[in-house]
Amino acid sequence: MTRRTLALLGVVLAGACNGAAAPQQPAGPAAPPGGTASARLLVVTHTAGFRHDSIPAAEAALRAIGEESGLYSAEFARSADEVRARFAPGALAGVDAVFFANTTGDIGIPDMQAFLAWIRSGKGFLGAHSATDTYHESPEFIAMIGGEFDTHGKIVEADVRVNEPSHPAVAHLAPRFQMTDEWYRFRNLASGRTVLLSFDRVPPDGVGTAGDVADLPLAWHSTFGAAGKGQGPRAKGQGPYSYPFIMFSTGVSGSGAPSSG
Image 1 (tube, rainbow, N blue to C red):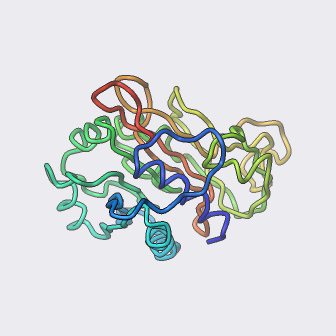
Image 2: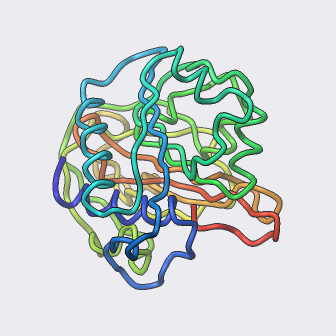
C-alpha cells in the first residue's frame, strides 16, 4: 500500500470514527488530546466467496493507521464464528465504525436489519473493493453501500478524475492522478451519493472501448437514514493491491443531523 493510500484511509477513518463534520479543506488526522479515548473500528475480513490475497496488507495498514494517529483502535472479525459473535444483538455497543475490507458473499451477519439500524443510529460503515461483492441477495445492504459489483477487466494503469477536490478524503489527489489497479464496474447504483472519484474515459482494461467518454464512479459517500436516502458510513476501495478509493456513508443520529461517518 502506498503513502497516498494510507493518507486517504487516515482522513476517512478519522471522520468515520470520530463522528465530527468533515472539514472543507484537506487536513491530516491529528492525535486526540491527552486522556481522550480513541474510537473503536471493527474491521471485517471474513469472505464467503473469492478471497483477495491483499487482505493481510489491508489489516496491517488499518491497524498501523490507528496506532500511528491515535484516532482509533482496530479490532478484527476474520472468520464466520467471529462475525456471528461480533454482530450478535447488542455486540456492536461501543463500536464506532465497521470497515468491510474485501469481504465477499454472505458473511453470516445474524441480523442484517439490526446492523442497518445500528448504522442509521449515527454509526459508521466503510467498505473497500469487494465490499460491494458482499450480500448480493440483500437489497437493503446494496442500498446502504450504494452500489453492487458487476465486473472488472484486467489490471491496468488508468487516469482517475477527482470529482470533489475540496473533500478531505481526496483533496490530496486532485485534480487527477494515475494508478494501476483492478477497476470495478458497478450496477444498482443508489441515488443520493456524492461521487468523489470517477473515470471520465473508459480505461484500457478490456471492459468497453478504451478512451470512450464515460462517467464511471469509483468512490462515493452518502447518508443512510431518515435525513438521507442512501448509505451508512461506508468506504469503497479499488484494487486487491491498494486501497486508494474510499466510498463511505454516514448514519443519521437521533437529532436528524448526519454524522460524519
